[in-house]
Image (cartoon, rainbow, N blue to C red):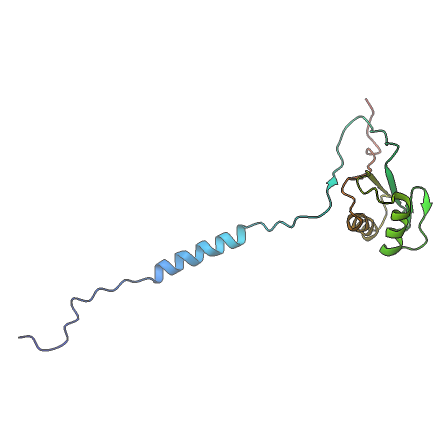
Amino acid sequence: MRIGNDNADEFEINVVSLIDVLLTLLMFFVLTTTFVQQGHMKVSLPQASDAASAPSKDELVVVVDKEGHFFVANNRVLGDDEATLKRAIEAVAGSDHERPVLLRADGMTPHQAVVTAMDALGQLGFTRLSIATAPPAGAVAQ
């Protein structure tokens, strides 16, 4: 007969190292995950090419000068806020939101003015937006 504590038959699993490995994997996946935000406006990024594209006749041209003033179809927009710009675009484009839009901005334009123009176009439902670019000053035409 045995008198005393009979703990020799108990089996114990040590999970501390398993928890360490799982937390390390969790941190790895959290830090390497990319968070993508999809925009509502499709933008045609400028392409580097030798040939210049000719503007189409039905293209809506929105110009932003270096002071941040807006021009829609060569007409100055009286006001630099987004609501005024949206009214001017609607007056020129009407309900044709499938119309291609060319955004021309001066190189010294404040970034906020360009973003305001893009945001106004996106809120009105324009999806075919192109941004005008110019070749570098030292580029040689072939």
